[in-house]
Image (cartoon, rainbow, N blue to C red):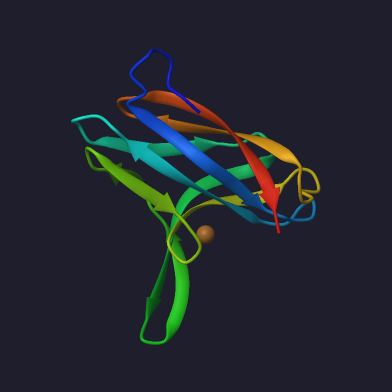
Length: 125
Ligand SMILES: [Cu+2]
């Protein structure tokens, strides 16, 4: 997904969403490439196919694993930031349809500087 205009300063790529049955939870992963000289902040994600979408981070501490919501994620200038298993992810609570492998869903990522970036995510097992 390329930001409108020729500069392509912030891009979101390789978006995937995990398979899930209707009513269950899923998670989204992607990479954010910030090619600008300024940091940017992802502060919200919209997904119409889920009741709620939240920025989350997973942690491992003293042999326990868990996760909790975060208010925003900062993406430093000239860097690539990965949302991945065991780290940052978008928690998708209560999916409104069966998410089967190969299906495509839309995610809107809201950045302070770059604005709203819409990506198509592929459902993967
Ligand atoms: Cu989570």
